Length: 432
Image (cartoon, rainbow, N blue to C red; front, side, top):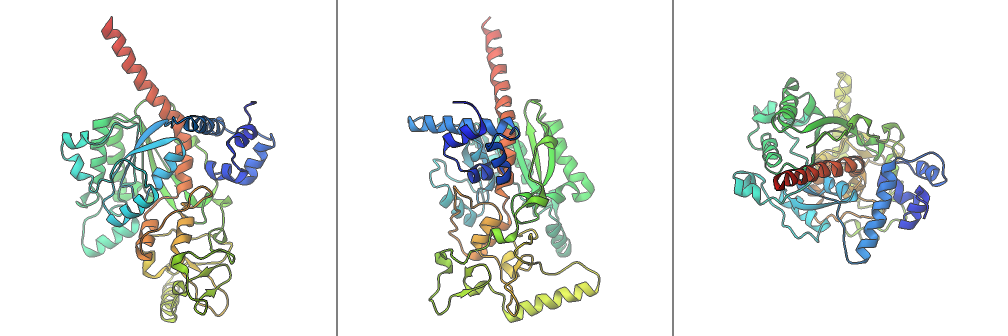
């Protein structure tokens, strides 16, 4: 079989949409490659080929994994989704929030390992660190509240510490360092809010990079990526990537979808012909429709709340401030979904037309807004709306993680091989 994008795609049984979703590119770009126009990156062809090999081995009863990873501060599994799509296998999970654990287990029910709660219970001693399996990649979305703009402002107002001075969350980064030092994985990827770079006048970020580079000897790079190229939401996050060996990875040369070309909010809203899920189901006399969805009326703002938000926005606008609600029409892109969305939904409100109050997003729409739902996977949401909003607001944009993982993968495998060759060379010398 000739090794072309079209031949590999069709051999895998992938639609053009499947390929676009996997690689985080537009359908038009995939159709262009499929017709023989342009030359897709070699990594795209490799992923298609690897998937085909995996399927063949799986059908013979020989599942294949290309690398292993651990999922720290796992939340609901957004980082995991991305690295599994690149051929990785999760061998260890840590998440302290019991509600997030519930969502995680529902969506990854076949794990042989149990979720560890507080990672500090493991990192206190060498014996504890030994309980973490050997792994090739460490993933950690370590708590961002100590460094986020909103988190810092709130803690300042309450007279509480933030950043590394936050004893409950800020120091959890040092637990990541302990694991990296003990296990020396081939690579790692850390995720946090964009404000990490500027927190405490840049000293926090310098401390993190210095510890990873100077103390542990990893080759480390960082980049801020906006998820708006993949989902209809402005969501900038910083990603810190490190490799045990200098394998030539250049984060700045990695390609991501332009924020200007991303989808609009109508792409994630419930459609008129969509079957409502159980949480949206009402007796016919209580059901309601708006311009683009069939949803429970509880998501529509009350007159009192809508008046409060409207007056609040007007007051701050008069003062020249930018505070206020974010009202979205079908072709708009949303502000950043936050963990506080359950309170009033003010940052992302859906316009329901003249004479109607706007509404919040439903939890299912939030799943889509974060890229959890795609053609191959529909997120299970086993928790209350309040918990679901918090979980999605704290999570990552899955297609961004897929794009990072796909472009990291060849270098992860090379870094693994460097270690293997180094060990083999030492053994040969010892034998001689």
